Length: 374
Length: 84
Image 1 (cartoon, one colour):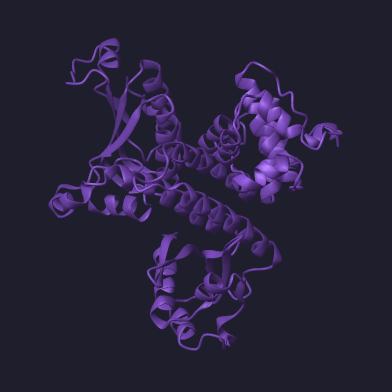
Image 2 (cartoon, chains in turn brown, green):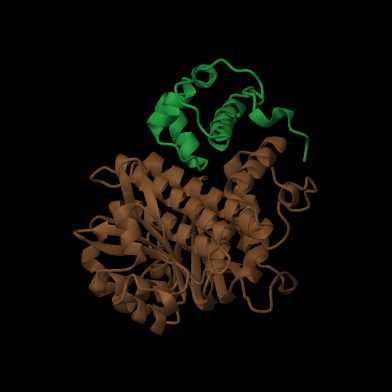
């Protein structure tokens, strides 16, 4: 099967080749060594524009019953967060039917993007040949690493969504204690990562204080901020003007902090701090659950599955919050109601919503779930 | 809000054939925030959860009942809410 040019964005060249049944049906002469492997070729710019043809091809893959899907990204010149999201949703969806997704052909830059997003294990991204030798020794605990990757990918999603949903935020990250110091486990861009490292190096800053004390720290304007005299000049030099650090609190104390920065002063009002609280709760819940259920071999398989489901539902919730300026509980209530009204499991509904998020919520549905909320 | 026995959610859990751990995992997979022990206490009526948490537990139970061919038998608190 191939998609016709009319189905494609001007920026995307998406082909579906080498699936024997499809090739036979369309009269193609190509053959593949493995009858159950479907190869999806992505090329050009992978963003929201590729959504529809990609979904059509995934539907075709499902219809033909492939046991393995290889996404070939050799020709990809650009991929944004939406493009990554498409691959995560696809992997999630395919996994549920026992189909494994993997990604091959990433060049060094694209591979770096997968690494920064902690998606290398989750999406089974084949490493570029040049780095293969260096990383040969790291493959021993692949399964444990995969489980860990699901957790880190979830936290990365929380950071990315926080930046997307909280107005005025130019970056978001999650800081956790590690071996007597701190580390950033998820970051939505390099500036926030550098801001975190400045704090670890100087030993002071709002995210360290939030992670240590369990109290929220808000620096409204770094121009007038006196609390962290060594760190603040570094942050200002990076163009940062305000910072909000929210602790990841659980019963026993703080697990870390969710950090937001803005290039504007007074960027974070009561509404923004409320939303940051919601995302911090999500990160704290995921972390405390992972810690409680982790075994030496990594996360329990069922918890891993649950995290994947959560990831899709959180993504849909983020879409609703961002699009309709809803609070998290209102968005959850709206999703529950729609799930019930349409007799679809919440996870399936959220998958559809995320897949269609470049259009209206729930496709042509006129229930007004998004517009009116709970 | 419909009247409920304090332990009605626990009765529903047992009716659905779920262990406490299984219900919690389903609730967690749907985005629930409560730890397992709190969920258990809430189902037994020993702890009052926020409305959103309670509705999420009800939804997790009803999704299980749907799998068993039963149509959302556990009442939602917003059952009387006007349709949106």
